[in-house]
Image 1: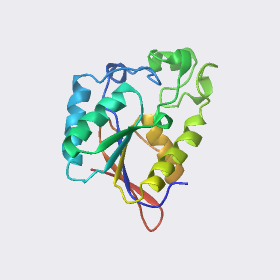
Image 2: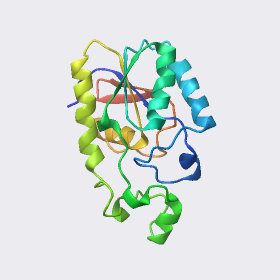
Image 3: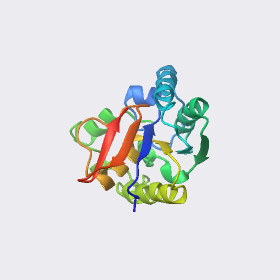
Length: 190
């Protein structure tokens, strides 16, 4: 589904809701000052990567991050709704730790078992994202592509290529080179 060729991934910079530990989902929250600085630092790292095309989530935090990188690289930005974060429904804006405590869920566990009925099904993002990445890589086979999106999108790509992510979530505005290797795939932080 995802062609065996390298591409880059960048999670958006930090927002106040990230800082406060809130479910963010499809809420259109802007980057905070730290997030803007993170996006600038990512742009500096990616300036030498010869990015031809940036494909971004339509949410403002990803678009702003993509725009900062585009200024540094000269790459065109394309928007793909398939790269949006999962919708947490009525949990959006609520503090994650508080919601988990209300439901008796340990903080280290994901929220899969407690999602409200108005949220996206937990696995929806895992089936939605890989075909989106695959379409762009197939359509622009000669281009170096950077995908700018969200933590859930990173997790979906990671699960599809190498299995479930372990440990901390992807870093804000930290570029990853995703490339095929002899045994499978590797995610390399730049």
